[in-house]
Image (cartoon, rainbow, N blue to C red):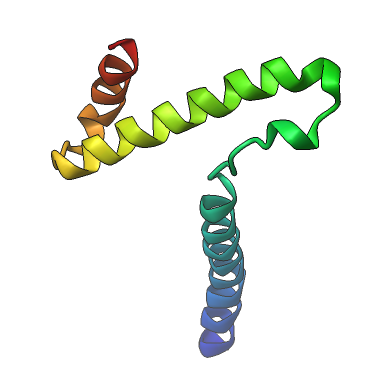
Length: 86
């Protein structure tokens, strides 16, 4: 009986934990945004799409600078924010 309760406990904790790990790995890769293509939006939204694409490119450049400078994760947001201001 004791072995059966251990199996139930492992199944009760292990399966949800595995599901969280799988979903977390999918969400991490989905969090990255692809670059906006101004040609794929309606003409009335093209100016906003161009502006958003420029922001995305600048953010990517600043993130790359943070990686090259080996900025710690806890300081990365401040570093990127300061980079975007310049």
